[in-house]
Image 1 (cartoon, one colour):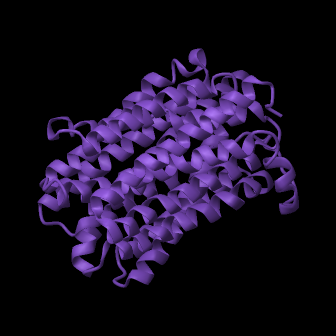
Image 2: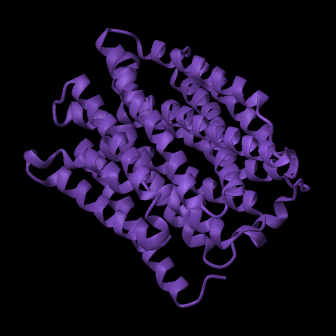
Length: 391
């Protein structure tokens, strides 16, 4: 009876984590499709739009810095429920306020929720499926990709019906409420470790060995992915003169290929190796971005094809870190996701201000620079770990 109960608990928690990442992907990726409408309504520049987005990823950074320790102290269920409440408050404020400052503040609260949601389900999957965490983390990321795919299709359809971008965000509140309601009734394992909060121990725990290079890698990866997702629709509409529906479909294709890549990639990352898989996919992503930006117009479809190559990088980096460091896992994952927040903070913001200064074509090209830095950091990790410098 206990074995059956344990299997049922694992199944329900895994399903809940998958649902939470669908909500994550959907909520996070409404901003890209609605950005042109928001800029037009408020009559603001690319740079001001970037400042508003800055609020979200500053909140994400703060949340990921503290939620690992909060999870160790109060449990993962508390962190996930807190994430849902913050998401609801942030989305509600963003759909209501008029000024750039209040919109940025709302996205800050939203970012706090996303940061907490980043840690919780990842930590649960790692603890429930330790032997096959690479597969399950990629499968969970498939649901993030599905939510990210649906968001621009949903937003593009409503925008084509002359529905306000604010009303689009209000629909998201219903999805968030459903997610919170379900997690209230999910039972979490009673064996979760509780530790005392002590920020002084973070440097000793989370910055040893090769961990800093993992942090650098994930920061540049997230800068590239979030920058791409945030500005692709605006780039296509204003530089390539694409209509609203077509540009949003391109973003959906990006996330569809990302979802497909994670669905397939989860089955081969173990065989090839975590870091080698990331290295090969990063090279493919750099080729697609550069060719799509500067190649003939006939191969511009390679821009959304970048999603196929970016797909496995985030969950596979997470799996690689948790595989090397099983102690203080929540704290280490919290710091890892903090650096992911740094990437999300600088990516859209740097693209925004580069676009204001040098034009959107050059600003959007900064993504290729982020990917090159990711390639360099992963190469360094591979060399050091292969030489036995993994501790």
